[in-house]
Image (cartoon, rainbow, N blue to C red; front, side, top):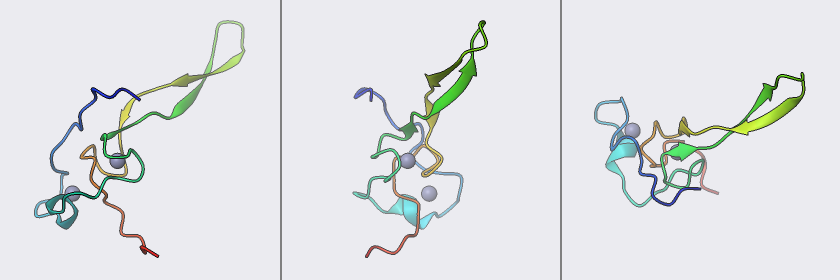
Length: 74
Ligand SMILES: [Zn+2]
Ligand SMILES: [Zn+2]
């Protein structure tokens, strides 16, 4: 996790998004960074599968770092 990484967006694509209006609720997928780092399988030159870590804007929060998933809190 790169501590200098900032969320890519302050708001998501939804106008008047209720989740973006809220503050203090970090996205549970990216812990509020706006980025997630999945591992992708990659076949190298010898045909060996290796796992590469990639950085992508978090899909859970559209890169805002704010929780966007309406889940039951209990
Ligand atoms: Zn939003
Ligand atoms: Zn997120």
